[in-house]
Each structure stands twice: as C-alpha cells, then as structure tokens.
Image 1 (cartoon, one colour):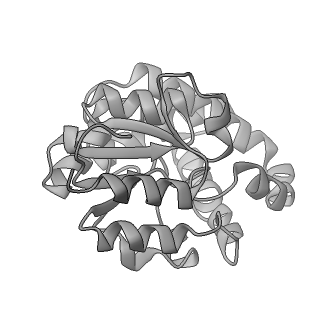
Image 2: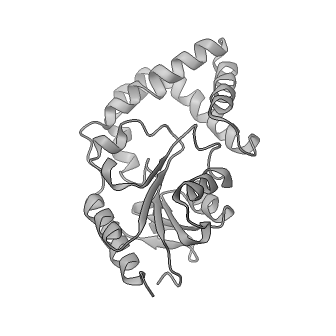
Length: 227
C-alpha cells in the first residue's frame, strides 16, 4: 500500500524500462570497440555526481562534462566533446532500435493514464529517440533528460525541475527507477517518493517501496488512486 495519493508517476529510462544486462550483451561490439572512451565516461560521470552541486544550464553541464572527459582521455576539450556527442550520445543510441523492453510496460502505463495520473520520464542521458524506439513516446506528459535536467541524480535539481514541468508538488509524485543510490535516494532528497522495480528491487532494503514487475506496479498504484 502506498499510504498516500499520488497525482503523477515518473520513471527512469535506462535499466528501468528495460534490462540493463540485455542491453550490455547487445552492445558488446560497441563497448569493446570503445572501451577506453566508455570507461573514462563512466568514471567522470561518478565524479560529476559528487562534485557538481546546484543547477547548471545545459551548456554549462555539457562543458563541464567535456572538460572532465578531456582530462581523463588526455585530449583537448573539443576532441572530447566531439567523441562524446558522436559515440556516447550518438552511436550507442542505435543499439536501442528494435530492442525489447520489459513486458507489459506500455499496457501498464496506459492503465496509469486511464486512472487519471500524469506520467513523466527523467533520465541522466539524452532521451533522444529511445521512447520512440520503445513505442512509448505518446504516453508521457513530461520528458526530461540530460543536460536539460540541470544536474545528475541524486541531486534534487532534476527531480524538482520535473515536478515544476508537471505542475505537481513533489510529494504527490512517485518516481520509479532501478537504482537505490541515484533514483530512490535522489527522489527522496527532493521530496518525492522513490521506488524500485524489476530485478534490482529484489535486493532493496526493507523500507523501500518495490514492485516485482510492471503489472504489479500498475495494479497496486491504480488500486490506491482516489483513496
């Protein structure tokens, strides 16, 4: 039981709408070919989450990311920016075309909308064409990705920006993701309720709201609407 009335349900994308393991397997050629870049990018992203506080403009965030990546790769900022845009934010997206997301995602989201709930996505990556590839683009009221989000999770900035765009108070929004440290804690830092879904939820602490799959999520949330 949720114990409160939500007006919107928001979702992370990567690892939440689909299996992290399956996309990594599909992306093996990409990851092998770009191992040094992907590894460096992963490391500088962790640093950004710790070091960057407050809200930055999209331009400032992209510049900060490129500068850190350049330092890690020992290249110019321009070269790092071009590599990131072309490979991390460009080429990798193609691997999501015709990729199967978790079962019943679309039907479950439709049930939430029919119950009168607003829907949103908040991602730490550019959303690009992913929602189109997943046949979900028509279902969301708000779509917010990096760098327009203003910061990376678990900063409260992206969550509060999403709430503002939804025009709903944070405590009336449920945010569902696949990571305790970024999604649940980040949501709670901003006054939202956080939850985990799918396989990652199996190892969740006892106090965290969890859903075993999307059918379970939709059934439980819809049953609470209007209470």
